[in-house]
Image (cartoon, rainbow, N blue to C red):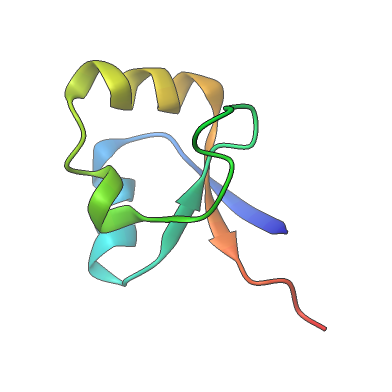
Length: 64
């Protein structure tokens, strides 16, 4: 799994959702797998804050 840019704001998460990207939170037990940003942006605010603090990243498919 290859991660790239860290997402720190809701605006960055919104841009990822509009471009149909996936995000991951490697340090989380539940969110370490790629999940569509469009789904994540609809989570409750206190959950988003926790994910931002743990480190949310854009997901890039591993290139072979």
